[in-house]
Length: 183
Image 1 (cartoon, helix red, strand yellow):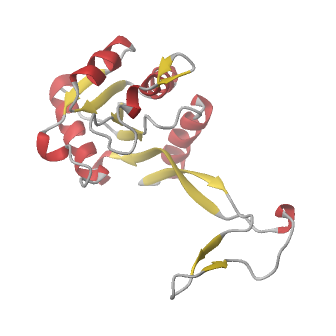
Image 2 (cartoon, one colour; image 1 turned 135 degrees about the vertical axis):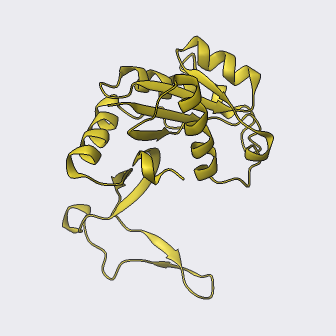
C-alpha cells in the first residue's frame, strides 16, 4: 500500500511572514510535520508543495521531496483541494506510481504526535472511510454570534466540563483521504 503525505507550505503568508519556516524550539516549523511523516509506520512518500525556493531547500534537508506549486495555486484565496490534487498528480509522476491514500498535513501543527497521525490512518483504512479529519473534544462553554452579530452562549445551562456531551472541533493537523476522493 502506498500512502502519500502532502504538506502544503506556501511562501507568501501575509498574516505571519515566512511562518512555515519560522523557528520553533530551534527548528523550522515545517520540520515537525516532515518528521512526523517520516516517523509514521504507514506513510511511504512525503512531498512538500511550495512556491518558495527557501521552503523547498529546508524541506529537502529534512527528508521531503518537493512539488513546485504553480503560481495559480499560490494565492491566499486558493483552497486546499486543488493544491493537494496538484501535489498528488505531480508526486505520481515523480514516483511513477499511484497512491492508495493521501494524508494532508499542515506545517502549522507542530504538536501533532505521530501516534495520533498513525491512528488516523489506521482508522480510515480499517473502517473503510473515504476521509478522516483530526479533531479535538471542545465542549466547554462555547460562544457564537446571533443573527444580529451579538455574542451569545451556545449552551443552555452553565455546567462543569465533565457533565457536557462531547463536541468536536477540527484541528486542521491532518486529513486522511482515499485517493479517489482527492479531486
